[in-house]
Length: 154
Length: 368
Image 1 (cartoon, rainbow over the protein chains, first blue to last red):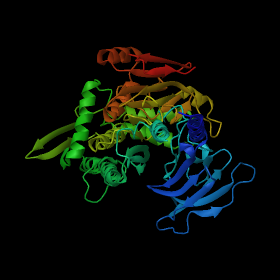
Image 2: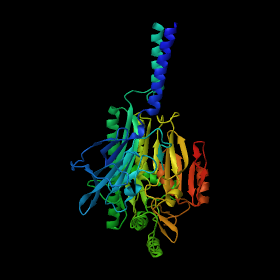
Image 3: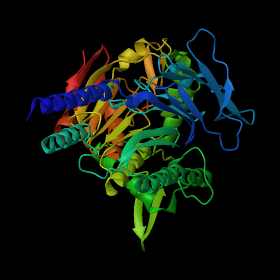
Image 4: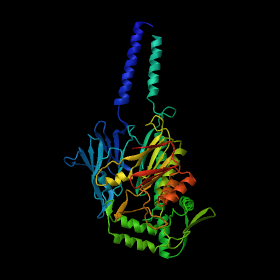
């Protein structure tokens, strides 16, 4: 092989190496997608990689998820209202969802359920105890991340 | 130039393969991660599985149908049209005030049969016919808004006097088959409650369904107290699945901190296993510094406080669901001889911020 060949091979190896490191360490994280479920349906899909979201109209309540305003000073950047399963005075009640882009977290900010278990869970980034409101049938689910120490908790 | 071309191809291929996860090395490239999120049985079933879209569409629908069926069969709070389930049987016995024999579906028959097997295996520490006693404690605990609330000793005394008057009926449930039909007999005075068995049982069926469809890489979370795993976890080099065992004392100590993320006291790593925990720390009230929770001992008809959590490892989430509930009510000396006799890998988190493990394997790592 000539010197030119060595230079070409070396350059290729360098490029491939840089690409590999870039993809491995700076590529999209698998835990950057989260879903807000109501009952068995995804109503909000959140992508923390590019701070974007997709709303899926609720069956029977096509105006929801409805944009709302996050509570000032508590970190939320955007907020939505969805309709939960908890019935009060004959009507299904609203559940307020907030998203914080900086901490890559979602919370149930407010609902009308008696024990407020989902609300008390506060900001959830996919680690630790799950964020669930059973009476409202609202569940926040993060795609599992390779960075998590555990895959499940009991 | 040919040599360079060959080298470029080799480099490209090596990079391509090094980027592959354990899933795609030897499987169909159409296989991808599918999310599991099912709202059923008054809880949330979550998880993920690796399957092609084509396979997943049918399997996931079958899984959801299965949960829906068992929800209707085992719900003891409401009945459903044309469903002969637990609610129907309980109401029939209560309204007629006499023993009743009812034809049931094979699915419910098999579930009840497992429960009877557990009753025998645990020497009565598992009991699925004391629904009336469970209702007394559940109503008391559900009346209070927050975990850990303190209530008057009078209310506890009242609950104790009520359950004292409720008999544990011996051999309350019996099963038989006739001409390929399935029957259950429930004695008057008893009430079926499958809360300690049904969710784990169906979640195990869901795992079995995945395996039957050649879906080997998955995790299923059955309502937060039970995890079932497959193999080939793409998130870890060795393909294992890690379960964090929550430190219940840490949860209790920080009940006032909204959004607190509790610590683990250990991590269990393996493949193709189930980890089930029964615990008192997330549903309890206090009276005179004693915890009253939702796991009721059939021996004493009240909650016992030998452990904060009890976790067992096994390969059947249904069996483990009932078994961990039963073991939670066993005094430490009974528990020790029981787990040793049956060689059960068991973790108990005790009061005084410590844990005790039985038949410990190398899969467990303590977290300080």
